[in-house]
Image (cartoon, rainbow, N blue to C red):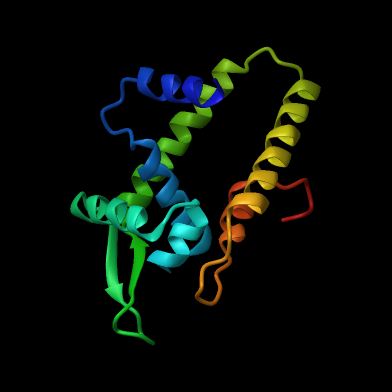
Length: 156
């Protein structure tokens, strides 16, 4: 129900520049963990590498990400967000922030804090259970989840 409601809110925004859910998550993950190979990116997203590879191919065609050969292994591609991809991701994040703020307008500070704490706890539990490190060296895919979650004041 939660995912359906979030998708409903996204579609109702009416903005033609919206990224779809997969594009937004992939760009957010790359922004959090930095340029990554497909296996690391797939692990950070909880996807198999072939699915992540297809998403990257579509997004590269739209100019949202770019591939370059790894400096240490020419057989590996390193995926990075483009300036256009980051700009669209930031625009989407701001639209989502505004829409969420409007939706939660009138909630008490205590309720908002509790909601944030519970979602943070839930997202960490899912990441710990479902995201496994890729075969390659760091970055750790759990770092993507941690980088995307809020941190209490003074903890990062």
